[in-house]
Length: 113
Image 1 (cartoon, one colour):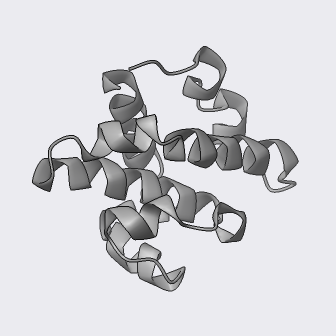
Image 2 (cartoon, rainbow, N blue to C red; image 1 turned 45 degrees about the vertical axis):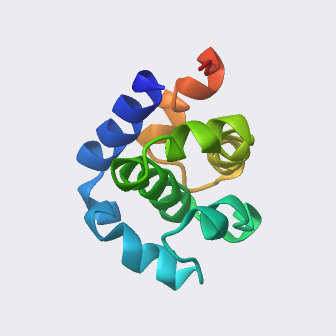
C-alpha cells in the first residue's frame, strides 16, 4: 500500500499540468463526490487519465480523515478497477505521454496488502 501511495504522489509531482492539487474539482467535473461511496461506484469508463489519478488521490487523502478507507478500497477491489482503467487508457491511448512508457509499474508488479 505504501508503494501505491508513493507512486500516485510521484505522478502528481511529475505531471503538474494535470493540476491534481485540485482533485476535488476534477472529481466534480466527472460528477463524483469526495466520499467512499462515490469513489467506489465511479464509472471508470467515463474517466480520463487525469480523472483516474484524481480518484486515486482522493482515496489516499480520504484515508487521512477516515483511517482504513484506503485499505477498504483495496479490499473491495476498487483500486484494481482504477488500475485496470489506467492500464487500459495508457495502452489504448494514441496520445500517450511518458507515463505510458512507465505503465505505472504498480500495475505490472501487483499490489498486496
